[in-house]
Length: 534
Ligand SMILES: [Ca+2]
Ligand SMILES: [Ca+2]
Ligand SMILES: [Ca+2]
Picture 1 (cartoon, rainbow, N blue to C red):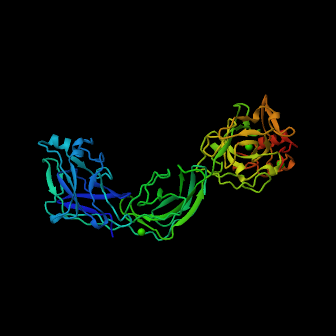
Picture 2: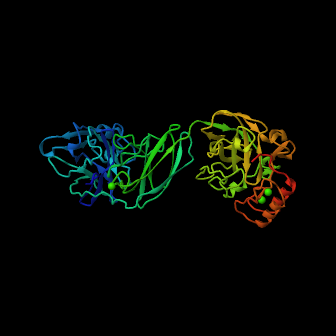
Picture 3: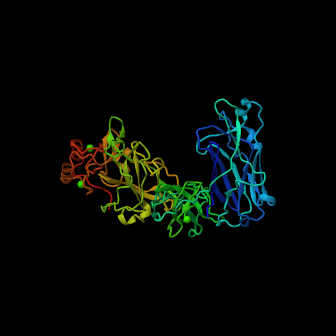
């Protein structure tokens, strides 16, 4: 049951494909495009023609055939669109006579009397893919949205003509009627379904979906709010995806939307509602887009996810002693420029104050000013058990000017599902001693800046930070072994990693290599310990 149909018309050395592409339902309307493509090296020109299509009338109630206004895409020999084409295309459905139940599209090209007018007026067809869309048409009154309407070309009938002009190097244009044709079949169906649906970067309005490919050329991701996906693509029908919820096509009249179609294994979806559950289904497919797609609809991988609720932000400024460059008054970004900052937050290890299983990850490091990942924690009191839930921990990026930003590399770091209020703010870094604000800070959707870099009194405890230079204070570096105290063990750790150029906790100055400069930081911080109660 081929929904889409191709006629490869051939007539005395002229080859032109006349294609129906991009068949799509929108509510009870079936849209489709007609394209003309030359398959020879000759320049071809469209002449007065009838495009006749058979359709299954039983699948429509009182159908009408129409042209989408402004959709004509033909150009003349000089590559210019002309209003001639728009006003000379008529559409109708024939119900009687030899052409009963045929969709008729009649193209009345402008008359021409000489070669100059010919080139100026007559629509050129060439071999470039997708350039000569005759137009987008639609049939109203579809009743069987999950059934193939079986559009197919009609190549003969009373009065039907499909004429193409061509011209050789010397003579004026000649007109040739096109007749014979063949219809192709739909693509083969994939046999291995895509799977492994998983979510990352969940916010109150967006999330990233990841998956593993099956054995088709592409895959399509469906989304439905509140309930499981209950409608699936129809073979031979194309669907346009949009990563913004409800902006892509939906499947027939359902509230199932297409958010991805392609060969990749990840998509970031936006436009979601806060604290709302979304259901997903992933289907493998074969075939050319808009042409002969075949979807594997059996046993699609499914998964659901609830978006985050409201959020508050922490807007803090902090320097790392190790990364701070007194010559630039900023922190160095060598890990970033060396391309060794991991794309997933590194604080999942089971270490005191870490053990954080957040899914923060990025497809690439989003800002050239990023120094490294940091872990931010909110507490209602000074003790470890005053960290109320996993929601009050978040990993983000530290910028070279001391800003702590979210995974988009720009905005202050967000805490979802956390109420506006007063919190202690803790900053943790892989090889610096953690610090906590000296008192509670009022945090809301848009929080005021709290600056840790201006003095010892900004952080909680006894000598919690270090005076790097002048009035500039920073987190104490040197904790290569993450023991929350700077000792000889850290020096030994650095020695054991000497010359490493990886993302390494012994690279205490974040220069991208473990060297003597890193040992010097330990000397300046020796015997200092974390003032955060963990
Ligand atoms: Ca199928
Ligand atoms: Ca240590
Ligand atoms: Ca170093």
